[in-house]
Length: 113
Image (cartoon, rainbow, N blue to C red):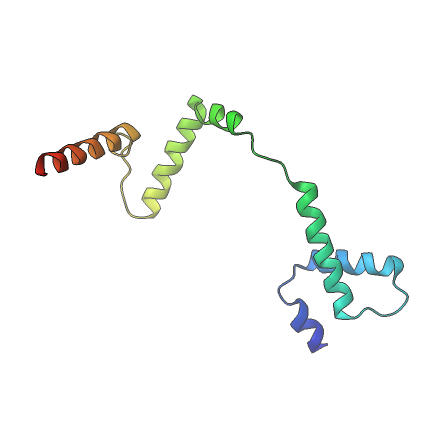
């Protein structure tokens, strides 16, 4: 029993159940840990290919530009900042403000040289 526990202690119960179910469909003998491990590995490989869907970058960009997404994003940022013990000011943290600060630093460095 210890061998089985050592082999599969990190596996989810549903993963093990699926592997054993698959084995018992065709297996004639009691399975060895290697038999179940092989079925788990095969299941992972087949699910990677089957479930893969490429991201539609254009659709994502359009969605992120909507007013609803912007509001939800700002609300999430506020909550995360609060959890981290900081304040969130959308004006202070805006891309435009950060670009302006970067430009000012660049100009200051240019004057120093």
